[in-house]
Image (cartoon, rainbow, N blue to C red; front, side, top):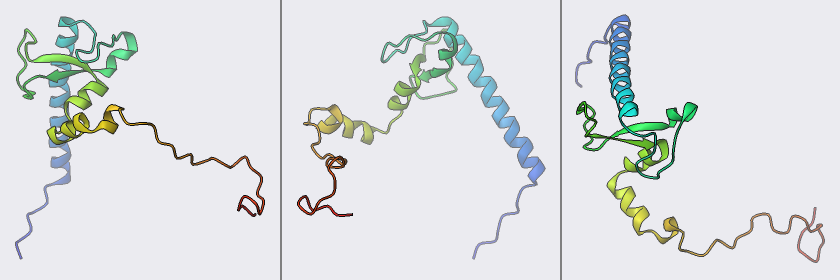
Length: 131
């Protein structure tokens, strides 16, 4: 059995986590604000326009995946809506599945099962329903 690591001091741990969180917010606010000044408020993937309170739904996507690569000209950024940003960060396996799955593309006929069919019919022995 391996010896247990000593637990860090809770106060010190909270202080470190708060600083990490604070630094991340500052870094993100910095390049997000820059990107919002540089680019039109339009999702680069779906073309949806954003204004006012909706701007919070617009995110900065790092094209090369490196969140520390933040050139002042915004060459590594594109603005994406929340939905397109999530889609962009899907794993390649998930992306391949949805691109090859006919159901995901909507080419399959709709399902014919009707879960609530027959609820309006009163229960009778003829239709096999009894209360």
